[in-house]
Length: 470
Ligand code: BES
Ligand code: ZN
Ligand code: ZN
Image (cartoon, rainbow, N blue to C red):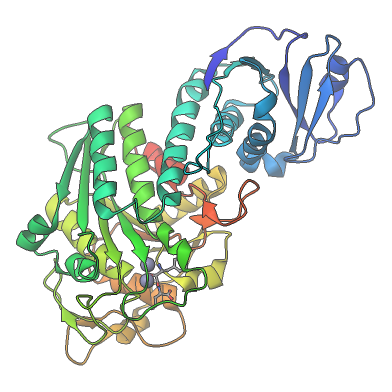
């Protein structure tokens, strides 16, 4: 959709009218002083008709506490009513501040997301121009909102894509195409390069699949020659069967989303490049398919890794930490980023701990933690801290190798996974791990089954924006 700024509303044309709870004066004005059966509760919508018979979509944005999730209200409105929209639509933006307006636009864009991409009959998508009134400068939201919303939709499509289409090579191709269009560098390390360079953990995880593993390396340098400010690493398991430690079949189909962390990395790098932010970032996606085959790596195997630490495999379903171990070692050795953040749908344990409400956040850097928490609350993609206590290290001791990939205990799984990753960070002082297993994929108002949420794109993008050196 297109968004343009206008001075004044045309009272005879269709209009989206955001209403705060019990503040319905404008609505009454536009509808000829009716008494509406509508209070303005968050994410409620009711259609009224203006004096000229035009539609007025009263959209409840609730109370002050609901402001962070205002995007959800607009997303729902767009999804529910878009089919009635004309080529141009007005948005009464004077009641929103710039931050709310940006969220509103991201929400509206997300409301156009088409989940049924593989249906033989596709819904026609009409292009709408949204004319926005405002009480201040809204160039920023009008510029950035549509970009962010559109990239989130691309990321959601990637996570929702089925694994027979979405192979590690497909993720690589996606990144290459995006890099070409948006002018950043993208290097693909295929099986041969991974073997030459010693990505043994990535190779082990991918061994059982006919779709070979790929490590995607993206670089966006606003200040060439300077160091890397932020390195991002994403878990890109395109399908997680569990390997020989096979998962139960119930809900197994959802394991196509086990590349949710990789998707965030790809989306954020694309956005940073499109927005031309003044930052140097590298994004690494470690991608493989964890399949069942006679060639699959086995429980009990000892494998090597990019860091040269040897790993005893206890459970082949703990594969995410293996590909991330190589991704982390690689990014830290090769690029020495000032900060490193990894994102991964890493454990069922974090889902049991925080359900669908927040990502698990692990870091020893309290400044990063505070900043990430604050931003998470602001963009409504919350993170909650979990500890990296030293005593969990014994859980990862192996008798025969440097480390084992699973403690074998049914407790603190998200923490031991994070401790495993930490062993591959070369004691980096500014590393953070986000376990997004519970939040990357979930229920929505528009799908029967769980689907991608896009969680993490706004969080990390905002974190990067806040890290730009003035
Ligand atoms: N991909 C899963 C984690 C996951 C679970 C993501 C639920 C999204 C929803 C991961 O690879 C996994 O299987 N983890 C195991 C590790 C265990 C075997 C040590 C887990 O958490 O159960
Ligand atoms: Zn697994
Ligand atoms: Zn996994």
